[in-house]
Image (cartoon, rainbow, N blue to C red; front, top):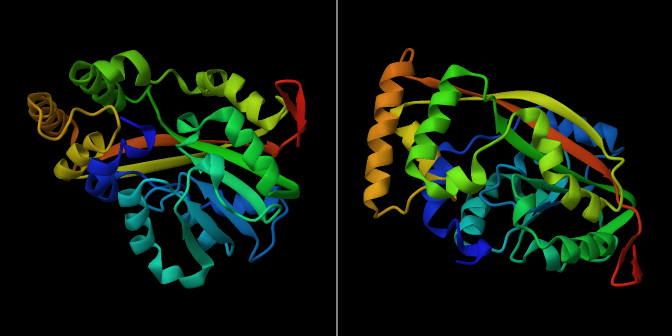
Length: 269
């Protein structure tokens, strides 16, 4: 399955239970990147709009770049109240079609690992205005929390892909996990970083939808998904308080200007 098609059958679960980002994300990046109201943000892999919302709320304009038709349609519907402040772009991150030098900030929320890094590096240097930055951010569950440890164990038991590729390391290793790819795109390893506290509260069905929204979750018509649901119900019963479970997270943010890189002996800016 192509990466751009992986979430086509998970849109409803994504809408129902995928976590958003802290209110401070948009204003903080606006300040540290020196942006003004109305500046253009390119949200690469904008999906259902969760990663665009903080920047719209901060007074910025957003071009949501999303190649998956189902995810893009959900984002267009969710962000329709923002009018012309948001525009939807049917394109991959590596070939956005945006005008050269038109973007004051490019961002990717929870999507950087899907991109072709050499092609992305070239496209970013084309669309970013002089002095503009790239910001990458992830919501990372707090794995020292007892509920999160139990939730990870349930996912690992249900999904071989989660066990082999997605089982998260402690928060402090996130930078190491992406360092080589980030350095290839940024053109250096001198990026700035900050983190914000975040959390999500889910009811019983929300917990099931949250797990079902992940790319590594078993297929919707599989026996494995039924087993996962049963395990999540037991987990909810053991940990819920007042009908909800809490998903504590840390939002990690890395940002910097891009420097010249060299690919196949050719200088790229």
